Image 1: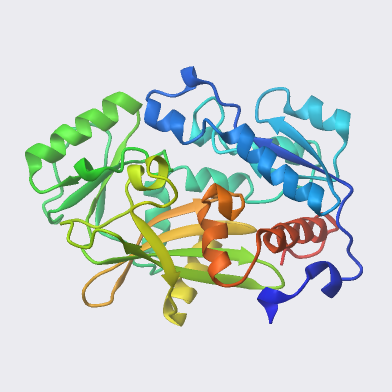
Image 2: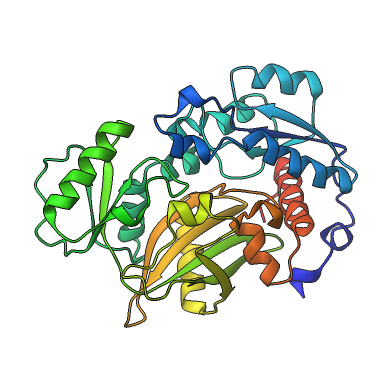
Length: 345
């Protein structure tokens, strides 16, 4: 089976590199407007160290680089064969993430993950939803607010969920995110826009189930689906909150189980392509009582690491029998082949 194969054996003409760099977010508390956002990145260096340990097990020498202005000089000094890009923000700003692949392109350094355009698109949830809508990928009805006082689209139906437009990691996705009336929504918008100094996206909350999709490129594009099984099914609104993902040990509010549907697989592949993503990506999808799908979030270069770091990519692929070592091999080999001018797998 594809998931079980050893990629270094199946592709005998390709050997793993001797040296690989790992870029990670250069995190300082003053970069972030809130403790919550800082919390999502404060362990970036330690997490990169865990990935480095796995590279060493594969016989590869790792180098760690913070994603800051010193990056080009550091890479030129060590001359790694390629870079694994784990940067989620630059000076606390996710919208600046695209400067990392841009820098790597300028110095002709092969790297894993999505490129400049895909990173820029993913940094703006409103733009991604527009793209999805244009090509027929179902999304919940939505509206972008740059001010908490803008008129509310009369076609939107409560309950509504307000989220930050340019921040991922479930930051400010709490039980208070769901509004049942306009007054609560306005208060929520005022807090988000003023605190984070960015627009907020409001979308209809889809009551029902939730599925996470991981697309990983290997010898082909493989989609892995897993449903979130929530541990408090009697809660009025069931969704993965910030607390579930960052405060409670492990995934305290839910666990994953396999989910299969070729229709959703096709949607995921389509979303991956229109978003100009590469190597791997993560999507969150709601399912209403009629079985209809709604894409509510997408992530290029989502949190990357082994199962012990509670990264969704490894937790979900482990259900399918794919180890983190195999994930690493797939990404490394894709990057090597791409750097030789061959089509990205």
